[in-house]
Image 1 (cartoon, one colour):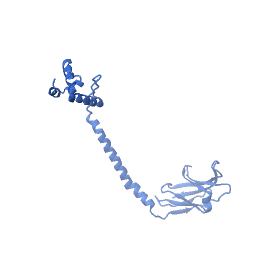
Image 2: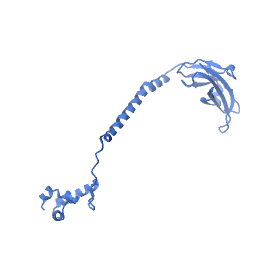
Image 3: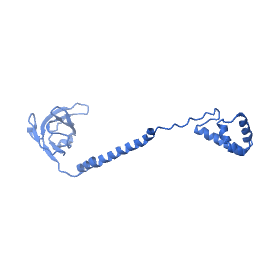
Image 4: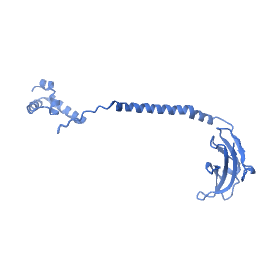
Length: 218
């Protein structure tokens, strides 16, 4: 076998894939031992096939042919991309239509309604009624007499069923003046509520109720 025959018959590839007969293999081995170009092609092709996992010289195992994926499987990545794009667009739309305008509105200067719970009529079973503006925050003004042995205070607002709706933690310093409690917009619906004021002396001790004030949102 000469060099031209080796190239035309793709001898290097056929040799590595063990497609030669015994006599053809002997002829090619006799040729490439004396042909530097074929010997170089044999080394580089062998290294490539080993790296690609198609064949090993020791056992000549061929890699399985790549499977043709069904058309639906090939469309899956595209479907995921479309779904992700729709979700992203929906989030942006939600931000621009609902969230951002609401944040801008809440960040803009505004006069808050305020209602006083310092009157004695708010104590016991008598209810003080407040008419609030829908969808807007307001202030509850509370006077809490400081106690010498009490360092921490808490104000809990609960509905008529006893469910706690809001809670505020206060220090003794907060009680030097009337305490304004900011009630977030739409946090309290129309109904009757109680404001429970409690205190404790240390972080480890339990809270003890000091006072309860009742009011109604209309």
